[in-house]
Length: 386
Image (cartoon, rainbow, N blue to C red; front, side):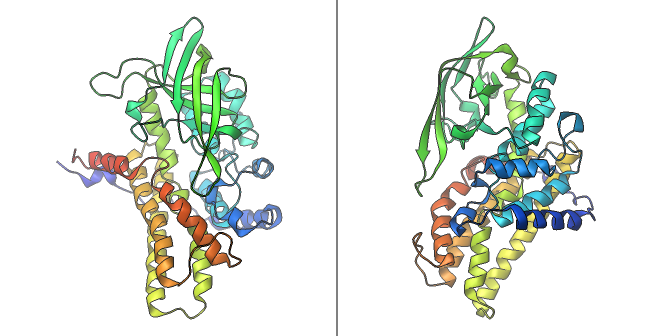
């Protein structure tokens, strides 16, 4: 029987200190955010600047919730949420530490060995170490249970062969969390999977090839493993526990404000372009968008509270991502209906330029982190409908 209790969103914990921290972050951004063309800030969490990541690390804004013994700061998930919101809204170049801070570090904290934690987590918290995610594959996409990259046990470790695709920033990353098949799937399809911690700089047999997107930008990669040897100490968690680990990891990936703020710069420029006295039609459209953002923010902060409490809100995170990316993709279409302007990346008008960039990237919003179809299947299971 279907049960809405499985998708309950508890009110996020109260956080009166939020505005104090928000003021600190805004002061930091005013001083340290590089002056850039608007097209550089429109990419939300895609901008890459290692020096900026180091400055954030020096402020204690990476690994904020982690134990101090691993370089963290033992602050709350809601304090971290404030930092994320402000960075995304300003278009700060955070991708140098984004994946490591958002999900790879928390995964290491949960299932990593002491050696793995001690050697890597302090470097992440300092903004000195970047990660990418080795999940998706050709002809597999978001169906992670169908991965074919195989890690065969050999003396001293594993020999890996296979291909990962759409691997964001693999060409810039120090490490990859790699999902491989180490055994047979079994009747449930989810068995026989294991995660590995891969040193991309030191491991032989790895080729990283660029995949350019519609806008001509290089964020994605194809990563090919050909007889790459991974020592036994590179296993992350337990052999065969990859599915349980990766589903918990995806709760971190799917629930954050980046899942509904990727089009935020366009919303700002749309508001400016409409001027101080927009039409009634425009006011209704803007009010609807803002109401949706407020609702999504409440849901997303609720998931942050669940994560802080040690829960695994996989279904709730899937719902936030599905609703959030739907809104992100609607915003450029609404903008085109309200302002008669053709998107043009070469334009000198900020609205037109941002519109062009957002429209070219919008199709990816509902793909990265799990396709809409996969997410809705998860939500249906959470409701007991399949």
